Length: 573
Image (cartoon, rainbow, N blue to C red; front, side, top):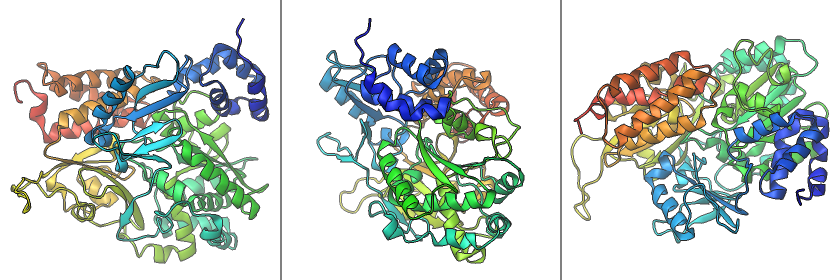
């Protein structure tokens, strides 16, 4: 019989019993915090306590990469090796750590003191290279590995305006510093229909998470449905490589998001809200919990509307809205078939409005200033402020707030990016050649590449769309001419192959085939016919996949094939 003592577990998960299956993820987090991993006996106790079939509990544990069903180290170091960190020496950092401890990535020391893992993007791209050491962010690691920052990461905030980020850059803003929820109080003097109208055509607000769906249309659909319970969900599962704006907003100004949720709840008649935050942001959870307690004490949250924090466990797919619902409900994060849509059948099959952090942060601004003043920023068809996550080969990586309509050239100039790739230029000091701009990846892994030819494109939905570039979640990852595009594509391929949930075959098989071809491209071992194979796989995933992950898994690759076709042909490099 096992010697595992289950008494601490029973006490730790007792509060989740009323939640039933919905309490599964928080219960597993609590259990893993006690034991370091999730042995069979622990999984069985959780299953029995919550009334969930044991097979389903094991299915959830195996689905999420941050849950462990085998022993791991008492200390876990997760080294990000995605694009932004790779540019700053992440592979060398991982090799150094593994050499020091005599491990390979994914291995644990014999005494179970340490596990070292290769990790997808940790949302620390502007402070690369970066790692997650247990619950602490390790950032700005020096080339000799001797210097670094450890703990809650800093926020580097720039740009030409400070509307959404007015409270960002100087640590967490308390309720006393934030002030009363003035916009929410103003909204309560309006009818729900008037609030929805302000967020609809009056302000022109569309979702800032990537889909750009009109916020007012979404709210209006949910408001019309008669239901005993409705939900507001904040999607803070930003796992797109190159994205870190949610991290800054929630760490530095959590009350702006909470106030936005209160406004949304009033507009549609919701009584419960959830903030779903990615598992790689554990240091944000205490900040959010404290802010929610402050809001409750001030009377903004309570019996009429309250908010609960849910923590993911390492699954990019849970950024897809219906997969996120499944996760909150205690299931594997598989996307649902649509229709029905969340506004009628969302979380727990009830009407649900789900918005991302940046979208919710726009609401206090719109309600307090009014839609007319809000529209004074940006352009007619892309109104308001926009946050861009700038990383890679720039002098000042960070979060940039600008009005819609600035050009890519202007944004890169603010960030001190590489000059356009037109003619060589040398440094006055040393006579060294300054690397020129090669490419910009818009929208992250699910985005597309731009070059110097796109520098004067305005950063608006309509202008980028006309140029075949996605605004996405605001990722602007910069590569100078010294960088290997095949290496970038290889990492993209590995990312999607790792993150595909496997529910639909076009994505499950397509991401694997795409990864295999991109590995050959990176090694300059292209086979005859790979160009056509890669196109066939890419367009099949785009047209036939169930959700946005598979539909965009080939976007950056297909754009690269247009820009640099020789990379994918034999004998061309």
